[in-house]
Length: 120
Length: 247
Image (cartoon, rainbow over all chains, first blue to last red; front, side, top):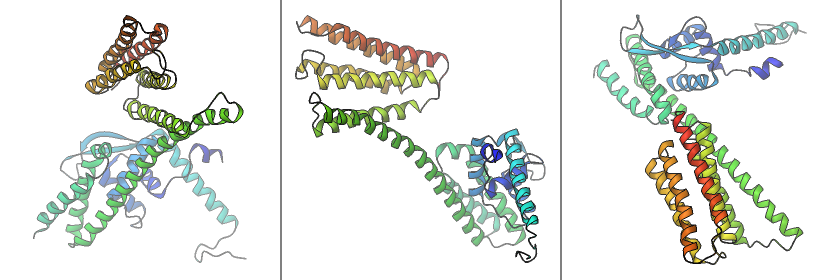
């Protein structure tokens, strides 16, 4: 509960962006592609959601702008890269812990994963 | 029309749409959004070809983002307006309650309207000017200046500084405020210029006292001196803000 006060729950978009940035710094399009890959195509984020979330995350101190550099794979203009901060890592860890706790509760209730119904 | 031409055309329209974001947001993310949009279109064109429905989705999604950002900004600003309105109402409760317990306080509805306009206007002025800069010295300087202006108007309306409130010589104090306001406009609210404007206001305040004295009117030198001290205090704070590099 103390964690909830320090790190309130994250929105799905923020969680996915933090996950995408947890391994390496990425530019906007790179984040989108990573989110799509992480979610196996289930999460399709548009630029409006992505950059709106990035703005709020910078304000919250979860991420920061890295240097502007060229993506070797895209071979074009210089891009702004974003990287996760220490606070962002803590918020991500707290959110993942919440998920683990929810899964643990579901396991205790012997929830059937296939049918999403309770086994008596 | 080739995919390259379509992408260029869509990108132009998208650039116009992105400009609808607030200026700070656009300056920070506008270029990135346009580039990401372009990357997405390029990828889509290489994979599947059909662009129109995809572009439509992106436009709707980005428009929703713009509305959300505008709404958040508006809510933030309105929070401050509501705070100022509540503070005004709270302060006006003082004379309202006093009227219930003593006959010494007698405010007409017009008095309440004028007082509300003065208090709300002062709060709003502080909010609009002080939030331009983050420095504590700058905010304190604005606070002292608007508080002095409020007191000057309030005292003149209530009892008058020169003689009583009906004495037309008190209209000279409009000139004092005008010096400050015109100075602030010329200085474009920059701290160094504001310091000069506030010093000029202090001089104008003492000049009014001297003119009244020369004309043989009772002009309350000490009270005028106190106001001049407030203007000078504000000027010194603005000077400090300029030295510490408030932007």
